Image (cartoon, rainbow, N blue to C red; front, side, top):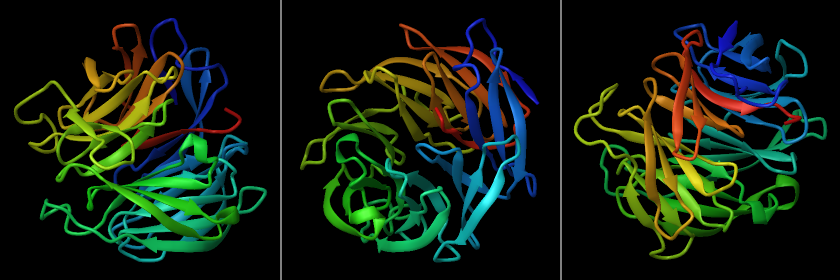
Length: 355
């Protein structure tokens, strides 16, 4: 399958290989390996896998880890992607059947990974072998908390794991949508266990979902439930919240509400891109000052679930329209370039090492 990305500028470096999680309709989900060839994104191979929800790549090896399932039994899977067809090299069951895994992150050292389980409020730490293969579960932490939304915040719901640059993998942050908090954990040697260091509360009803770290150490995070963008640091009353979109009124797809989801940072670190699911836009914010400033907003296909940023473009996985959308970066913000509709329900994009 060839995905013409449009324009004379290639979407990324020639030969770049990308892993794409495709949930697909019933029974057609897969991990797909794509490669940039002559400005096009070409599918090299795939491995069938139902309900693939998220991906993370090893920092040095051509290995991709994925989470599947929920509701129902959930799994952690590792694939070797050094050939066209991904090869499963390990699979482990996650602790609870109704765990609903929603995010996976690999430590910069490549020695362990962390999985966030939305439904049970748990984090699982898994050791990785030197060759990238899955080892054993090293630890599990269950978060405790709730907030003001009776439907979505009746308990803690961890939604993303982030390794801050300064910690060199010794610490990680967790966005807790249910508890309106961002937690900080310290990791023992080689991921053998974790302990809680601190938790920073965000405005009630925010529902923090995804976050990125800015070059100055501040955190920018999406507020899924309040439709906001947060900017601040992990201290008391440090967060500034602004609307995640310039749109108003009922959303145009899936639900009447807008739910900002993924967030990504520009290569130079002065802008962030926010995926508004519902209004189906990507909003661009300048985050170089104390308060984030909306500088552009462009429409995309339905339900932009995940963002991948390269040097000159943003690739958007639009789940409900089964579309990969390329948005070219510019001084203004973003410009729509092309849409490919042949990927069933894409949910996650991850570059395969070597990057």
